[in-house]
Every structure is written in structure tokens, then in C-alpha cells.
Amino acid sequence: MTFYIEYSIPTEGQEGAEIPVSDQESGYTVPLTETDAPVVRVNQLPARSSVTGADLDGAKTAAELVLSHSKAKEAKLFEDEEGRLESGSGKLTSVFNEGEGWTDV
Image 1 (cartoon, helix red, strand yellow):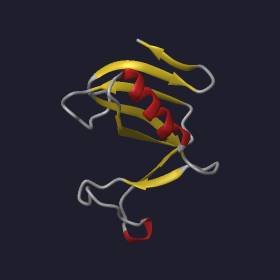
Image 2 (spheres, helix red, strand yellow):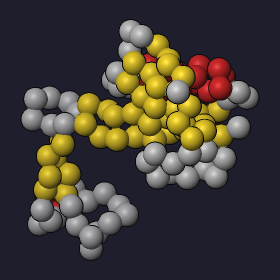
Image 3 (tube, helix red, strand yellow):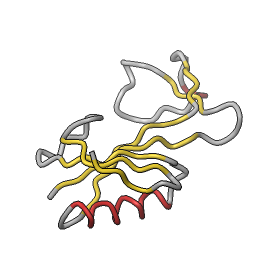
Image 4 (cartoon, one colour):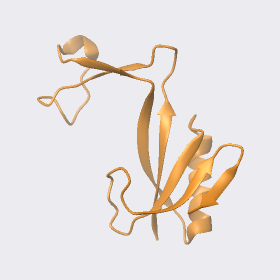
């Protein structure tokens, strides 16, 4: 089975992170000092990661390992046989909240 976990990674510091926004320079990272593109400030960054598991319980265990290395406090687990990277793709199976664990949907 193919599973994906979606979570948000909080940025460091009080001011958040600055990200340049440029359609002309999409697909690679451009240092802020090397572009005059407009800049947006964000307080968290979205992530979608593949997790391996033979079944839902195995995927939850693998997802918890990913979360333990991030600062995320909540996450969503999707089953997606097509392996899409778009946010929200697949069937939502479970939601994780720190201190509460998993809730199946």
C-alpha cells in the first residue's frame, strides 16, 4: 500500500521564513540576495512525505517516526495508490494530534 503523511513544519524564530515568489525562477532555490522577486513571509511550511507500511498500522508507525524528527504537532495520513504529490491527494485515513495519537476517519 502507498501512504503519504501531510504536516506543517513551524519555521524558526518569531519572524518566520522569507520565501521569494517568482514564476520566472520556479523549480529551484534562489537565494534572497540574488533575486528581486517579491518575498512572502510564512510561519509554517507544508510537507507531504511518503511513508512505507504493509497496512494502516505500519504506515502510522512509520509516520510517527517522520513526525518525531520534525516539530509538527499534527498530521494527516492518506492512502494514495497513484502516488500523487499534490496536497490532499488520496483517501484520508487517519489524523494525528500530539498528545492524543491517531484518530481514524
